[in-house]
Image (cartoon, rainbow, N blue to C red):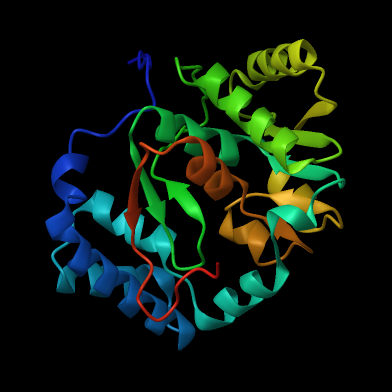
Length: 246
């Protein structure tokens, strides 16, 4: 069946799965899963154990997995994170789909998760195909405005070439950048994770695989949501022992 979505909005289950009353169990599940990961337990079996304990739905389990991380990973990510004033005047490399999708979700009032490491993540899934929605162009513009406000020297977007419609998205991003005179490069590569994980320049992503390997990174999605999307639906699932530094 073709994907006919016009928005990157909330899933039908989200109003119940991420209602305020569900937060305590979800936060406890993130804390428990993070403890298990910190002690070397396998992620899949640990997620099943925690999910069964708190009777979580599949979508809630996905959210908990995206928000949890081991103590070692948390320390590593915090040690390599840059603040907005750290990247002023410097170039930045963007994990294109990763950042863009989260901002699209924020614009459409879908659920954004505040994870243990302070990253803002969504629960959207492209399944190998990216469909431009009504929020796509506005999301690109918001990202550009945020980078301009920070004073980033130039931005280099990386998009997954195997994902269908990446070429069309590249054209869209390029057109928006040219209309604002933003010095952007947009590149299609087979595996952005592999490129960004070994980058020496600052990387904008919330992808755990990249965060655990890259040199320095900036929490761009969080910055955009906090500074430009005051009505975004953010579900804070970080456990109380690991608040994001100010």
